[in-house]
Image 1 (spheres, one colour):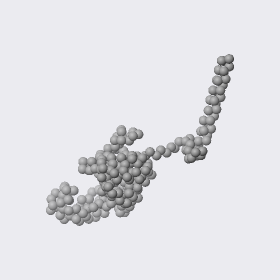
Image 2 (tube, helix red, strand yellow):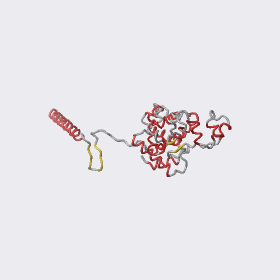
Image 3 (cartoon, one colour):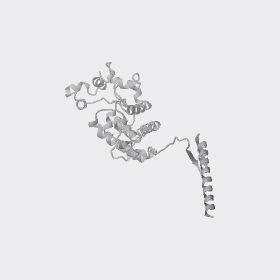
Image 4 (cartoon, helix red, strand yellow):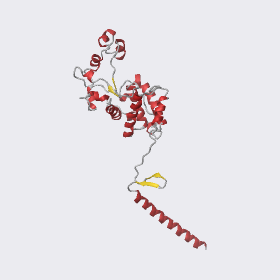
Amino acid sequence: MNRAAFHAALRQSTCGVLGNSFSKAQVEGVEVILDEAKRRGTSLLHLAAIFAAASHETGGAMQPVTENLSYSAKRLTQVWPGRFPTLASAQPFANNPRKLANRVYGGRLGNTDDNDGWLYRGRGLAQITGRANYAKFGIAGAPDKACKTDVAVKILFDGMERGLFTGKRLTDFDTDDSRTAVATGYRYAASRAIINGDIRQNGPKIEAYGRAFEAALRAAGYGREVASTDPAIVVVLRPGAVEKTPGAEAFNASQGGRSNRLRRLIEAAVAYLARWAK
C-alpha cells in the first residue's frame, strides 16, 4: 500500500472527511489505524468503516478524545430533549460537565456510584461510555487508559470486529457484493449501529465518510499485496537467485522425475513411428 497516496487522496476528498489541511496529529492517528489493520489483516471495506467511525467519533481529529459535556441550556434541550424539555430544566446543568454527566449517564450503562457518570464519560477513538463498557475492555479500574493511543485503537478494532459496543459487528453489514473479489457494496450508513443506534441522524455522515475512505484505500492499493503460504512456491529475489521454502526441493525433484519419464515416452514414440514409416 502506498500510504502517501492514501493521505493525498484523503486531502482531495470532496466529502470533507478530514478537511483540506491534514494536521500532523491526524496523520499520526491515521497511521496508527493503518498499522493495526495491517497487523490484523483487516479487509478494505471493513477498514473503511473503521476509519469512518473513528472520524465521526473524534470529530475528524483521528486521535483519542474525551467527551465534551460543556453545553448551553438551549443546546441541552436539543441534545437531550427527553431529559431537558425546557430551558429552565436545563439551566442547572448548563456549562457544568460533571453535573451533566452524572445526570445523563447516572444509574445506567453499568454506572452505580454517584460520580460514575462523570468517571465513565465518553473517551477514546470510539467514545466508550459507562462503567459496563469500560469493563468489557478491562479498564474499569483505570478509565483514562481509553485515551491512550495503543489502548484506544485496540478498543476501536475489537469493539467493531467482535460487536462489543452494541452487539453489532462489522460482518453484520457485509452484502453479497462486498464479499466478492471486487469488494463493493458495504452498508456504511447502517454500520453506524455498531457504535450507536442514531442511524437516522448520523448514518448519512458515516456513509459519506466510508465511501471517501474506501476510495482513498483503493487509490493507495490497499489489499493488493498477496502473500502465499504454499510451501512449494519459489520466490525470485533477483535474477539467478531463488529462495526455496521447506518442502520445495522434494516437490521439484518429484516434478523433474515425471518430466524425465514423459520425455522418454515421447522419444520412444518418435522412434517407433520412424521405424513404422520405413
